[in-house]
Length: 304
Image 1 (cartoon, rainbow, N blue to C red):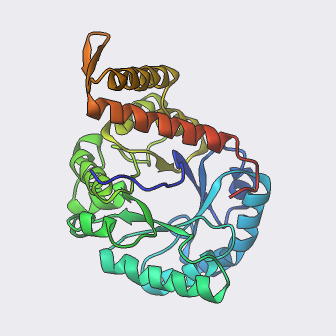
Image 2: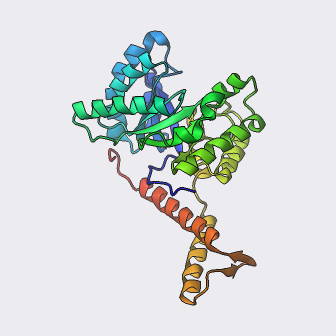
Image 3: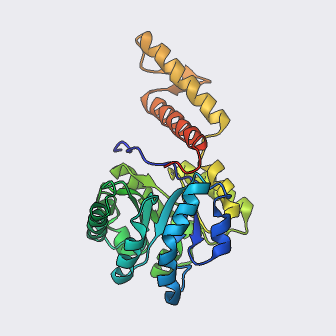
């Protein structure tokens, strides 16, 4: 597995329709790691120009009053994406969520556009991340190439509803399991974040079921997910965070590993289980994530 680069903590990313003021006004109070200003599915075609014009003000409001990172979800096809990107490449935007990724060349083209805008607008080149959304079987077959397409790409996920429609299936946990696992494999092999859940984000009424799916998704290797309803934010934050018990156990493993190394041993027993290098590495990764989450919670409003 390729070592994952240092990326933001995005356990939860809440969609916020750019054209609905009441959702924008309440977004910073929801506790999401990231807020996604949506220019795509939640905005009717006739309102997209007006929604784009609102982006700078929304970004400023989010930055001034909250500590969530800010993303902008853009449209496909290209003629819409270009205008969305022009509105999104501004100070305060951390990432652009790319919908309906077609292949690595698609992301490279958009990367070039963003780079030119950063240069012309005096912004740090390469600071704005991409999050790629794969939504059809053809692009899924290119997932490994997509995951390695550009250094801007922080993570990839599967658009469950569109993907299920494309293959003529219902978006159930069972039908999505295999393609979701492919996302994890491609992301981890490229050293980027696997984002999403095993199921679909559309059903938010079944809280118990959603909680189970989030926990299972974390077990499969996912590190965070977008959501369409604020009630799901605390479930995602909890489900994609190490528990107190997990942190304590990982600390024991790391401490005993240091002791074993000092005694010239590469493995040791703990609670009746053999602990060797891969288990120690998982424990170290868990503690690193716990520290990153703790640092995020200490971040002041308005900080990047």
